[in-house]
Image 1 (cartoon, rainbow, N blue to C red):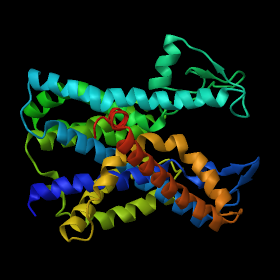
Image 2 (cartoon, rainbow, N blue to C red; image 1 turned 60 degrees about the vertical axis):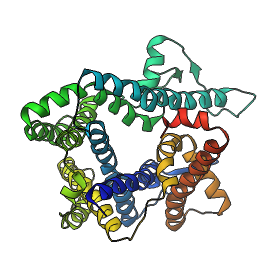
Image 3 (cartoon, rainbow, N blue to C red; image 1 turned 180 degrees about the vertical axis):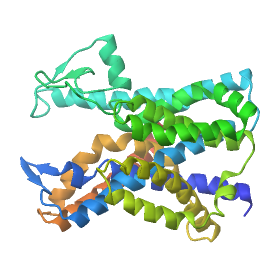
Length: 380
């Protein structure tokens, strides 16, 4: 297997496992709890359960976005040539692969929410109003803070509300940031051509310290600093024609070091200094994920399942629309109780069944409605 083949297979294989971790990250039953018919479950949580769910949902998934930004930056520049004509071609292509799917996947939860509010269709447990103004529509698609989008809950106190500016379809924030990086790609190209690795190092320093120092007030800056650093890492490798998988896979000690730091990260959640550990954890985990997958593929331990790889974006975009409903079905079908073991089963089973449902829907859509499937996935 050549180095280029290994890199291609590593990139392809990483897609679906990382998306599975996205689902797990969005269903942390220890943090969110579980409520069914007004009864709250998972109240008494032992320390080991909190540590385990923190590790799997709050620590390990932090490497997902950095890996995808590195891959995106690399693929954007991997041919090395870049000028005004190439830039325009790439922008036209990204309209189909990023912009159109972004709006469609944010429109879907809006329509589902409207259906939920119809009194003859569903039982309403909350009273919400729909306010259609240009500003609120913009917020719904790009920064859906509480009561700032088109869905308004009268009487909800949003004073002091802070956090990250998610679109209404939460996972699509990554696509939003990626589109910003694509628009800024000439700047990355010019800086990397002029300064080489030094601009990447500078962006890395900004990323490492910005999050601990300005969280949560600097939410937009946190995401942009992360996107800029990891996108520039991939862009640097693409522009300089560096095989990043071949460059990283020799660091076989990193996965063990990552596990140690990840364990410490999970144990120190809530501490003032934890965010610095988290940043080190993300950097090590990003390298570790590439090293582990490349080694496993090289030794023939794993192979790329093309269906799962192709469905990864569809699963990523759809899962939050069905995740919590799937959890209720799992809870009912398996007759789960309030024990910690029941909640642990619910935690893993919900992620697995959600992924399976999304893959099945993707396969059906691809077979029977290929044009719509192509619009939703950007032709992936």
